[in-house]
Image 1 (cartoon, rainbow, N blue to C red):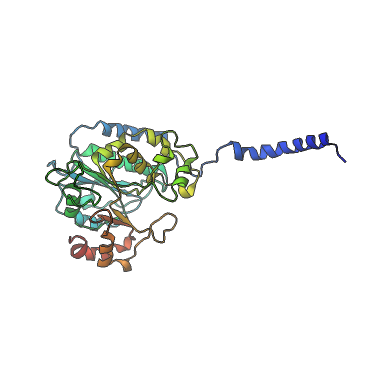
Image 2: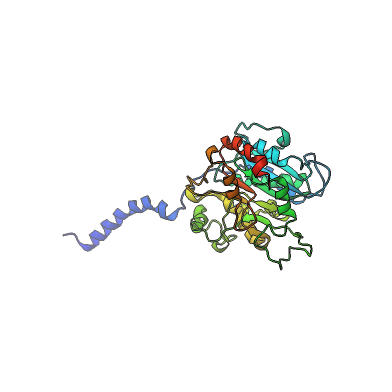
Amino acid sequence: MFSTPFVLTFSLLLSVPILFLLAPHFLLPPRPLRQVLISPSDELDDLALFDRASGSSLSFSHLSTGSNPKLKIAFLFLTNSDLHFAPLWERFFKGNSNLYNIYVHADPAVNVTRPKGVFKDRFIPAKRTYRASPTLISATRRLLATAILDDPANTFFAVVSQYCIPLHSFRYVYHSLFTSSSFDLSRTESDPDLSRLGVRAKYKSFIEILSKSRSLWKRYMARGRFSLMPEVPFEQFRVGSQFFVLARRHAMVVVKDRTLWRKFRSPCYREDECYPEEHYFPTLLSMSDPNGCTHYTLTRVNWTGTVNGHPYTYRPTEVSSELIYQLRVSNYSESYLFARKFSPDCLRPLMGLADTVIFRD
């Protein structure tokens, strides 16, 4: 029989290599799954742009469409492929050139065809984008900053993708955002943002802000347990759609931010819960001005049968007047204004419905 001291000594010697083998798993943080990092040069370029936008003066630039300083909607197209529905958007914008501006951020790694018409010369200097990475935050901030600098009349900033379509005419969208006192169903008669005439004296941002998502804790932990602390405690972490319509004052909040950006640009440890573009904007605006946001989006998305985080994609055989009417229905506003996701070959049936259904309000 072995003596007790011998057994203890042998056990200790045996445990040393095991500790060396297992220590990295307990003592060191896990290795990030995503290594999509923003280069220092890209970061410096963006900071210079954001600084200019943050201190922008009220002057028009060469990109402004028209000299009449009426309030405008800036449409911000974020894409990594061709603008498949450019003809539909062309018809949407027709006859309203003094009420909107267009800005397109196209991934430079992709050979994107640049449409003519209203999209001519509307592409801004762009950088690489990767799905579910901070690069999508940067691209959106780049669009916002460019639009802020370009035209002081840009009052709303609508972020859309190449798979988005309008659900109404431009006039309906413009009226809903700027003058309708009934469009936002969450408003009350005592809302201080409504003037005595029933028009909006102070514009709200239409951005989805969720605090009770089932995956909220997993998403918060995606970068590591304490990676967002102390700036963003879990109680203030929010998620929501990356497609939104921001009022100008909130667009300024986004381009001026440095604190939260330093947190959300960090790489993730959980790939399945890493969607920075769906975390950063809702959290930032919820922390800075929760009452100035509607907490819902104006872009309809179908999450039935989602695959790898992608929403349902509509096909040509599904496009009909009934589908358009269904997509408009909202519990929060009089109607959704945009919808996604449509496959590129839906263009033909959508164009067939343009004048008789989509743009007939």
